[in-house]
Amino acid sequence: METARLDAELLIGHALGLTRLQVYLERDRPMTEAERERARELVRRRAAREPVAYILGKREFRSREFEVTPAVLIPRPETELLVEHALTELERRFGRGQPLRMLEFGVGSGAIAVSLAAEMPEVEIVATEVSSAAAQVARRNAERHGVADRVEVRVQQDFEGIAGPFHALVSNPPYVAESEAATLPPEIVRYEPHEALFGGPDGMRWIEWLMDEGPKRLVAGGFMLFEIGSTQAELVRRAAAARGLTLEAILPDYAGLPRLARLSFSHIRVRGEA
Image 1 (cartoon, helix red, strand yellow):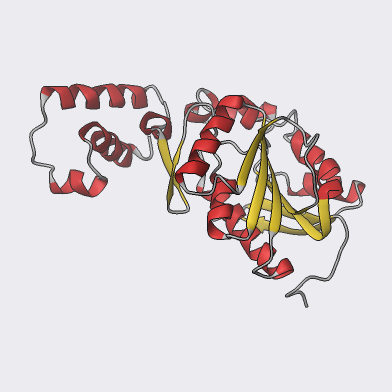
Image 2: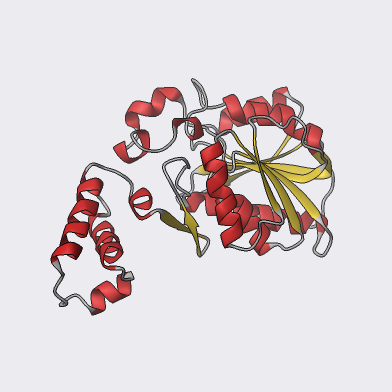
C-alpha cells in the first residue's frame, strides 16, 4: 500500500483518540491493552483493503471534515477543483451579492454542495441523490457545517418536480466505464457504492443524460460543470456537439489530465471573457 505509513498513523490516532501530531508527540506513551486491541482491529480492516475514510468515518474536503459511510463515494482531491471552478465561474458570470441557485446531480456525502454553500453565502442548492442512505449523510454534513437552510437534498434519480431555473448545474456523476472495473484498486471496487461509480459501457450514460436535461433548467448565461474520466474528453466533445451545446472548456486535474467539462446551451458573452 502506497500510503501505509500515513494510514497507520491515522488509524493509531483514531484508536487512541489522538491527532496525527499528538501521535508523534506521544509516540513513547505505552498503550493499554484495550487501545492495542482497538488499533489491531482497525489495522485488520485496512489490511482487508477497506478505505481509511470508511474506517475513520470521515474525510477532509476543502479543509472541512465530512462524515463518510459506505453509502457514499469518498470525496477526492480532484473534486475540490470542481468546487473551485464553480465558484470562480459563478462570480465571473453573475458577480457577487445577488441570490444564486444551483442544481447538483448525485450529492453523495454533500461535499460539493456543502462546500459551495459554505464558501458563497449567496448560493442556494437543490441536490438530488438516488440513495436515501447517502442523502441522510449529506443532510447531516449540511447541518454540521451550518448550511442546511441553503442545501436541499432530494431523494430522486431525475429532476422531476424540481422548479428552476438555476444559474449552474454541477455534478460528479458516475463516469467509470464498466469495462474498467477489473482495473480499479480493491479499495474502490470492493467497498465504494457501484451506483456512484459506473456510468455504463463507456462511462457516458449519466454525462449524456445531464447534457440532455441540464440546459432545460438553466438561466440565460448559466453553465454546467461536470467531473469526467481522464480518457473521456473526446467522447464529451462529440456528445456536446451532437446536442448543440457549447463545450467551453476541458479543465485539467492536479496531474494535468482532463477532469472537468464546462458547457453551456448557447454561447453568451460573460463577464471576464475577451
